[in-house]
Length: 95
Image 1 (cartoon, rainbow, N blue to C red):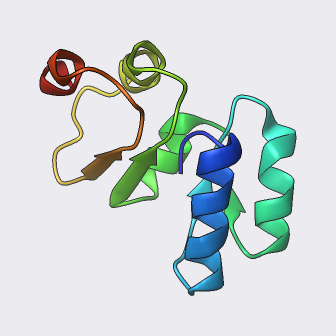
Image 2: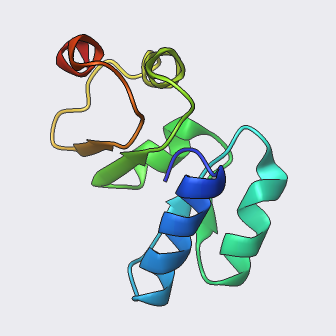
């Protein structure tokens, strides 16, 4: 899970409570602590989290933040990216 605001944290908690393994990352690393207490692993960087995961859930403020976070990756081939950020249809097509 990339992004641990209200929605990202709530979704990660539900997934952890249902025995899904989670690697979590947030710009404010303290937001990972409650989820680590529930069994998640905290990534030190987005790259580390993406590398360790087959499925990436993005729950960030806007698409610009998502693009900025994912710009460091030459390829997401073989990964499933689930985009949970609210945006326009055009932005979704761009993603």
